[in-house]
Picture (cartoon, rainbow, N blue to C red):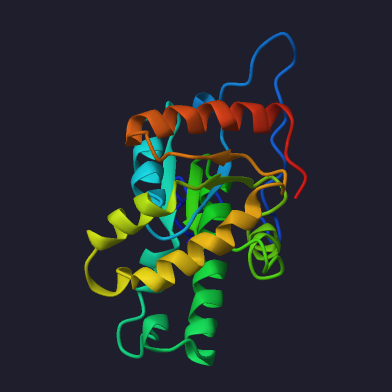
Length: 219
């Protein structure tokens, strides 16, 4: 007796099929990121508002969109969770690498099934192999990176409102923010959302992505 047909609607993920660079629409039409299937990497320090902006942006798109949070995936590990705040070591490094690969696979799977995605991560400009290079390997060259970088006073204030292992010391927040300043001059689009609320930041993100689709950044 033949097996029953697959009625789940699942689209198999092609092996080794990372997302391709999105094709800009033909002129004179302007790129419309709200209706385009894309993959976005939102970069920023702790307290930049990455998660809140990513969720809002994903919630208000005209096409199905998933938010893939690196921290959420990393915290899938319960017993044996390696918290970097307790000391960065081989175990925490390995769990971050595993979480990034898992997020990359999830992004490719969503995209293969017609669902856009936005990922968020504190990617450092001085670690290209682990950061942008790693995300390009995991997701593909069509990933559109955008940096969210408010002022230090803003990220310190937002970090102070956090709880649990997601709250960092002021010294660590300042160190991370200082390293993130290296994105200036990198060619990647940067949004300073110091004076912007979440919906305003999401609207600017759409504008930035429209330009990135029309003229993809070199990274």
